[in-house]
Length: 270
Image 1 (spheres, rainbow, N blue to C red):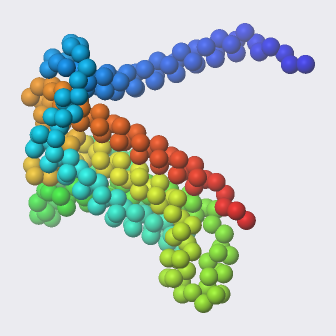
Image 2: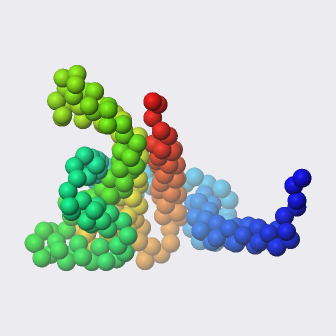
């Protein structure tokens, strides 16, 4: 016969529920207000004057904003492509070959995931000036790849943890070269991890502000940097609209990456 939970447990659960609700409100209420006021038919922030879609239409008539959006998409795409190659290769080499410095290499690779962004941004800016590399698209992509490819590597390593060695051995026994076995057998098996890492990499690059602020030029500024530069001159409903578009795109990509990650964690059929 089940016994009712002690009164203390009930109080603890209620306090936990209240704390969770408070934290969620603190995190998501500002975003909700941002989305709501992107449909406000008023240029005065905080004063509701009816529903409108005019600010979303204004996005496509703002050349500066469209240029920044184009820069963001180009940089995120190139960053993702490079990060997928580097992250997948690094994960496979660390899994396939054992060497004394393997753990140290893994630690160094994932270090950019935990280093404060302000430190990374300033460090990259000083490095590029020291080597004489002008700030622009190349410097932004290099800096983004540094903190994006570890996410791809981590996602692929999670997939490699369940890899059956007999898959590669069977391909080699059937006459495939090591390279062909990797492309035809290993890569398809790793694809869920690669896709999840690619989505995370694209999302991180698209949203990144601090590192981009220190490593971009006026011609290569992305949407987050553009929003920061314009918001210093005053709030505009167009900024709410483009921010809403980015928030929705980020949420969709994050949910998709999480779905792929869950599939990635499902053990392969024996």
